[in-house]
Image 1: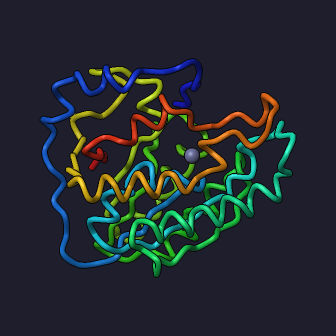
Image 2 (image 1 turned 135 degrees about the vertical axis):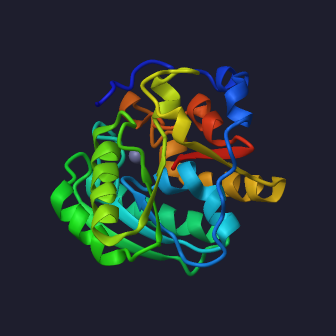
Image 3 (image 1 turned 180 degrees about the vertical axis):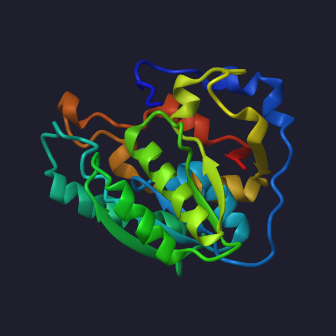
Length: 240
Ligand SMILES: [Zn+2]
């Protein structure tokens, strides 16, 4: 199911007014192990589970694409330059989260054209029984996010790793009580104020996505304030 991502989407104030948001069970945090985070594009890992990574104090990132297609009409950046900028932003964001030593596996898939079968094999090589694999939800509505989620699910099934799925664009197109979303699998991660601040600092590292690259419409930010608001909550949500 790929859901078109259009318009301004569901406002953060509507989500915050939904009582379920504070009632889902808390995610049990394991005391050992480095989770593998699957990021279809640079920034997904921080927006979705940056707070969780900061709490765990460890992460390894599978950077599936370099996000070179975020601004195809840019008057300033070529796709190659943008890829380089975005790779650097990931590194910077992880450092800001306190994860300077986090290993980043650059898997080099084309932005917008993930090879799902290859990705499943690459992820399986990185996973092991019982290890956490955090990936974008298979129903998230963006083709790359869904492909990465499916590949992660296949890799977890093959290796015995534990899949946790994080929504990103779901918060845009879905609505409270939306029956297209597996809310019954939702688990919350409460973020203490210090972790919220670290996550906000890390999100701000993605300058190419949150500020205009230049003067033309094709340079407009992909993550304007009303989108970013959904990732400034005091809690994160994963589907277990
Ligand atoms: Zn993405």
